[in-house]
Length: 108
Length: 111
Image (cartoon, rainbow over all chains, first blue to last red; front, top):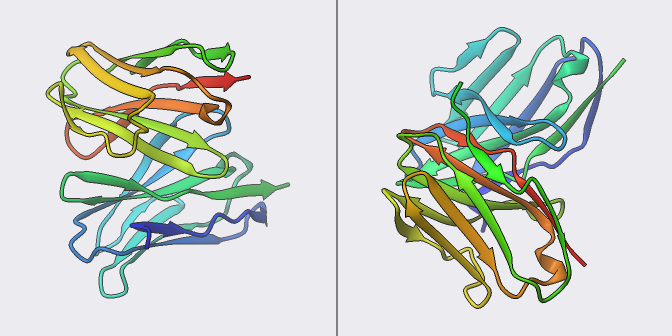
């Protein structure tokens, strides 16, 4: 079983829509969680950290559910510029595990 | 504005040739990672170093790949001999705590 599993999508949504991605992890001992964003032909960059209490940054909300071992990313009022691949990252011990990424295209 | 740099940015080579990729991490980032990314497999960890010491290279085909960190400002990934299935984007990343800072990647094509 993979450490991190992520629905690859693609998600194609109209501008203004709300879209949510989930990512599951297999190790209950994992201690840190993040979402990264990767634009086409670019490197991944940190989008936001994920906490059990939730983390909100403008239109983006990240949530951690330890009981069910998943993290989520919610994007409200999506913009064309949100089109990218979103990767979840789980840290277990001193190991980083990346999901394969979920592709999002926001359509005018 | 400190950044991770990687060279070359693009490399096209023929099967059997040696390929060397270089990475300059941000000064002070004592953990350095090498990743490979393809459409099919996503981002795969090849190897990583902490304070220049190799900690894990289990993701790397040892018969042809080697990773070194000769000093704190340089990490190298070498493929010898290269094969068409090695075609991918190779990223280097550095971190000091939990955030990883990626370089722009080396896009490798092996014909």
